[in-house]
Image (cartoon, rainbow, N blue to C red; front, side, top):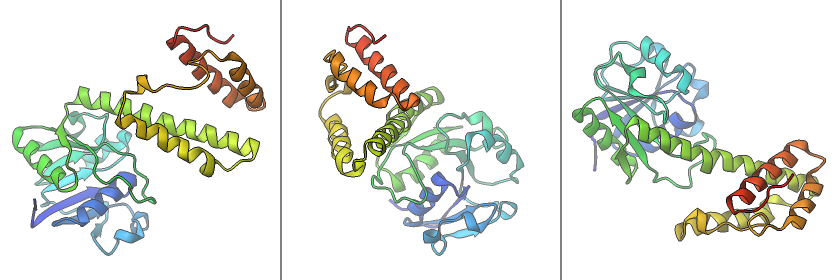
Length: 261
């Protein structure tokens, strides 16, 4: 599938904007990245795309993607000139009303975790689409199809639920990785060498079974002696102690055991 001659303007050079610029720059699409300063633009894409300031955004592109923090989408949108193309944002939790000043508007939400300084290891990820009308939906799906094999329409309430689930399986999980690495530092062992294989195996099992069928650990067994040993190790770090106890109690309750006092 190609979109020869199409012009995409990405507004914002943060994590999402940078990765979308990388992906679309490999397609038959002209990419312009609008940012306050060119110093924000990742070095690897500076020679692949056009860069403009926020004051010189071209008005005749086919699609404008606002890859911005949720809190500023409406403000930035209201300050944009009269744009001739579709205007969409990339947020999972903001609705179409943030772009109410544009008749052709939508949501183009890439459901993936991005860090601009790290290349993606999973390049094919879902893109969730919402649109003001069927013509806009068709165009957004067409653009999405250039970089994803799993683009789909998702209205605001569905998208918000997906975003919530994503926080659990990515953001909260990463918080627990941080906790594991902190224990490694406390006990002076190599977290990357010892914890990474466990992380991989735990994640890969999800290809075959539901998470509820895969729970292991001392809490599900009601192994209170082991849990108390772990809490003893963590007593010097009140935050890790609290986190371990709260999560253990959540599991104990789930599997019908008495919670830790």
